[in-house]
Image 1 (cartoon, protein in one colour):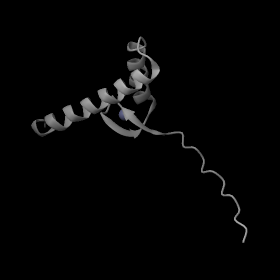
Image 2 (spheres, protein in one colour; image 1 turned 30 degrees about the vertical axis):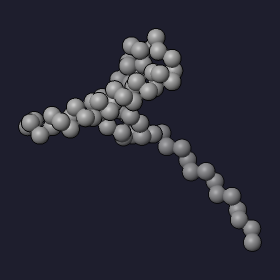
Image 3 (cartoon, helix red, strand yellow; image 1 turned 60 degrees about the vertical axis):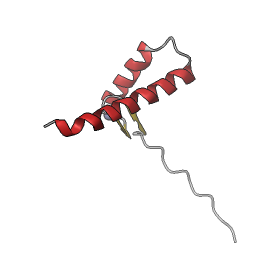
Length: 74
Ligand SMILES: [Zn+2]
C-alpha cells in the first residue's frame, strides 16, 4: 500500500498569537502586531528569549487584569 504524502496545508496569513492590545490569544491583525512591535521596541535592551518571556508574561498579566476587572465594567 502506497501512501501519497499529503501536501502541507497552506500557511495561514493570520497566525494566532499573544495579543497585548486585546489581552487574548487570537489571530493577530496588523493593529495587534503594531502594539506587539511597539512593546518589543520599548524592550529592545532585553535578549530575544528574555523579551519573548516578558512579553508573554505581560499579556498574561493583562488577561488576568481584564478578568478581575471585567465584572465591574458596563
Ligand atoms: Zn489583538
